[in-house]
Amino acid sequence: MKNHFLLLLTLLITFTGVAQEFQGKAYYMSKTTIDPNFGKNMPPDRKKRIMDRMKSSMEKNYELTFNSTVSLFYEQEKLNISGGNSRFNFMSFMSPIQGVLHKEYGTKTFTNRVELFGKFFLIKDSLPESKWMLTGESKTIGKYTAYKATTTREEFQEVFQFGRQSENQESRKPKMKTVNITAWFTPQIPVSTGPHKHGGLPGLILEVNTDKTTILCTKVVMNPKDKIKIKEPKKGTEVALDEYEQIRKDKIAEMREMFQRNRSRGGDGPRPR
Image 1 (cartoon, helix red, strand yellow):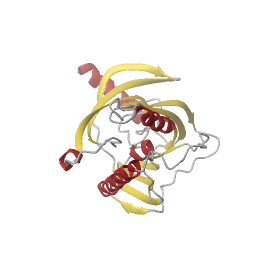
Image 2 (image 1 turned 90 degrees about the vertical axis):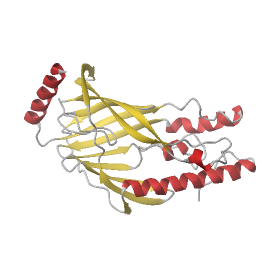
Image 3 (image 1 turned 180 degrees about the vertical axis):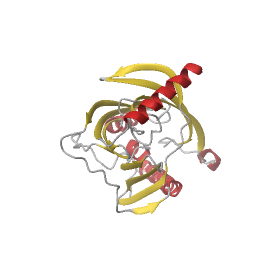
Image 4 (image 1 turned 135 degrees about the vertical axis):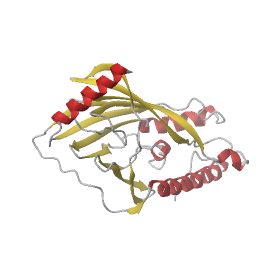
């Protein structure tokens, strides 16, 4: 414990000493695994078709632009070359990483601009508090020395069921689960941010493992020749996080009902309005 405290003190001193006005851009790739129980009540051929359509949503690329006070995290645009129907995008819909996320380190607040079936929302709220524990472990990621930190977080356990739905409404109530989070950060880049809403460490987070998702930094560009303008997202209905989550849950319930109706007609999935 004493060694971990000394490590933290050293990192904080380093972080404070080198923090200055600068800019940078970090590139990340993410990969998500599917719950093995997914589609257990589904015919094998139907499950395979749905899994094939979901594959592109399980591997994504992101960019994080940052300076000493704010950052902006967003998914890289990519063309749909699969030829599939874009209406089927359950993984993206259920993913907690959506839209454009603007974070302010000092106030520990965020603005997240997301689209929900053609309507834009501006989610404004406080960043989650994380009680990080340093393990004393380190490794090299690219040209940076990264240190390991862990924490846990309570989250709602959401499962979109494609099989038969239980008539017991009690079984549909959201349940909480404890999620273990492991992050690797480098004080060589003194910004208290990282991918998505992760942050609060004395250095840029280069890798984070949360539940079934791993996000890994593949490249960092410091002080690029072209100046970066980090603007807070605008335009959208302003809501708090809990308000948006209720809206999203209502839409999930609507999708579930549409799926059941469509399934009875022999279709593969819902057709959102």
